[in-house]
Length: 420
Image (cartoon, rainbow, N blue to C red; front, side, top):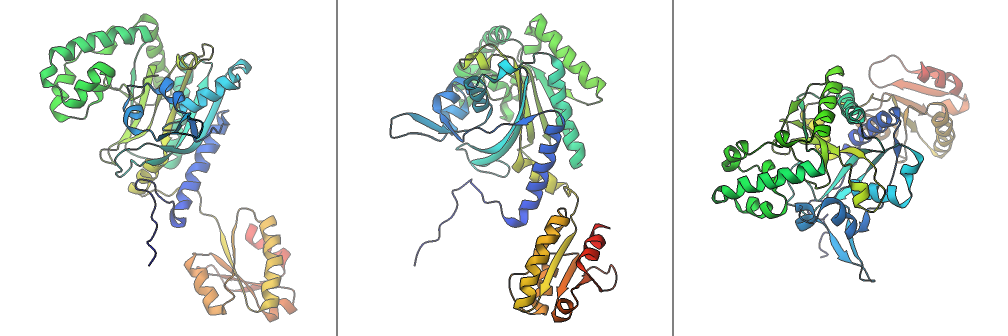
């Protein structure tokens, strides 16, 4: 007996029964982004490993523990992308796109991290993100927040909270890092293993520790807000003022540092308590030095990414429906001549009624079995083609949800009927 082949742990199939939510959600997001002047960008799933080393930082958990990396036949180190900002920045530099002015782009696709799978956190996961290159003012930071806030309203999400913080300039952050290292070194005997390791690699990440035993120590740590440079403080004040004028509520979370080394100034997360421990559904911030760090000319940038798996889980948890339900028709035909005719009619209906879902039976079964299938797909109407309808050059339209009596009409009348 041949062993059954299963998907890799943490890499999941999207089943047809779940695809409608994903398609509607993606369509809603894409339409929203394009309405704000964003254009789609698509980068490879595989990049040179150095792309992520330069961008994310070698001392991050992602690079140290989670990337899928291998050497190709030429000996070059390649990696599946664990996030997409690095690839988008590489693309911007390679094609010199910022020279054409401010770039507003969005992307979508699969990302890969080798971590312990759990609900809302997978080894292959899907993100949609937006990035802006060439604008350094707080207005564009606020516009990204406005886009996400508008998305939650369109979907109907409840119980989501915006958390914001500022990391200051690279210089201010470096100075704060020294202060933080000094503080945690003085209390090293209270740190856990992860925090001790981060003390020498990425001490700001200690602030984001979920270890309950460290919370009092972290709460008493020096605050980055007290070590800001004047320009970053002004930028943050302007950012908050834009959010206030947009009536978007927020809380300042001084422990919000994000897990990637490239962030500076504005950072933010949209969180919820409806998904347990995996409560972040969207996150981002400013990364003004990253383009230059990766070999390009100095170019300010800001962006965010949202996780589709977590967002769909939240939509389901809150019992929401996405998108308008389309009218659907099931074509019932008996016999070869009727089946052939149904193909001609289906072609005309698809052209005349692009917003209608049309099922043309391909099982070649009895009328009874075809009507069972129409009920199974929850069709609103059946178009019936029998010998009498073909002889009279008509179709019979039968409402399947108590919307009226069965009627016979020609195809032009039928199209008008379904448009009404």
